[in-house]
Length: 115
Image (cartoon, rainbow, N blue to C red):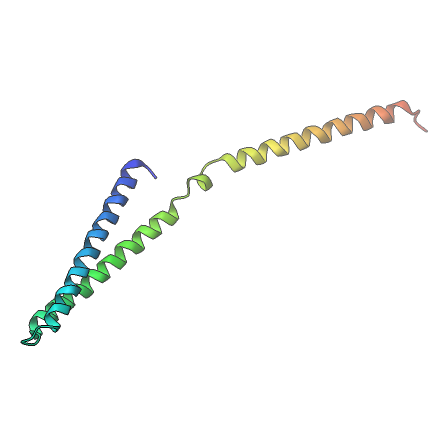
């Protein structure tokens, strides 16, 4: 994840945090309105509840996108380290097999052929 993407991601998460605070303030406002001695104003409660629900939806969408982008970011899996190490191991195994074959050939050459 490059620094610009990371910064953008952090900014989006900061915005989500700010929206969560706003949602809590909305909920507090509705609670105060419901506890009002004169009774709650229906339009006030309705508008705040609509705004609350829309904000929650927006927060969920943003968090879902951030989680998805975080899951897509796997630098270790994208690097060639595993392939290079596997290649090195195979190379060493091949060298070992070749030395064993060379030793076997030398041993076989010591014995006269039965032709």
